[in-house]
Image 1 (cartoon, one colour):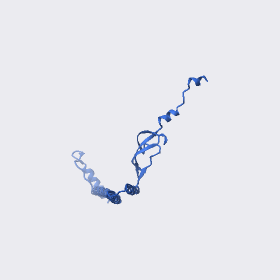
Image 2 (cartoon, helix red, strand yellow):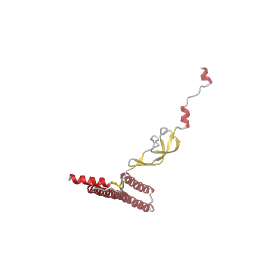
Image 3 (cartoon, one colour):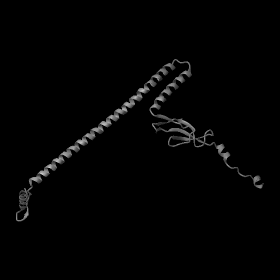
Image 4 (cartoon, helix red, strand yellow):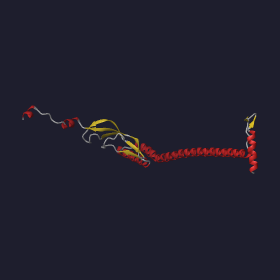
Length: 203
């Protein structure tokens, strides 16, 4: 075995010397080295195949998750719409009844009941109104349209709410549109210190 390796080595050394000592145009590769190169090439092909399969599996999983998410959103929307259908039915019944009603108060009561039903459905879905009246103005939840003079609430607090604001599952959905309280001009003048008169100065 040792002699065969020595012979292969000698053959390689001799093949590398030709043409007056110049390097040969090609090298003789031993069978063992050729076998190693073939194994490495085969291993490279196998790893590349595994990589391509992994990338394909990942892409399929990504598409599947995107589809499942889309279907979940559609299902959630379907549930909300199903819950709102009775509200539509009651509005239609109320409109039909109001055309023949002679008691305005009964119509108002009916509308209020339908509104309460709608608010309850939205509340169960995570919608909550923002309590703004009388609260200190907060730009994170309130949108101010200006100031209004009043002494009924503290200065800097919400005096009037033009449009309700809402939170959805802990996040701001719409800010409340409000007017902020400001001290009346008369109250501001009364708070100012009085100037001394000539008579006061002589005392």
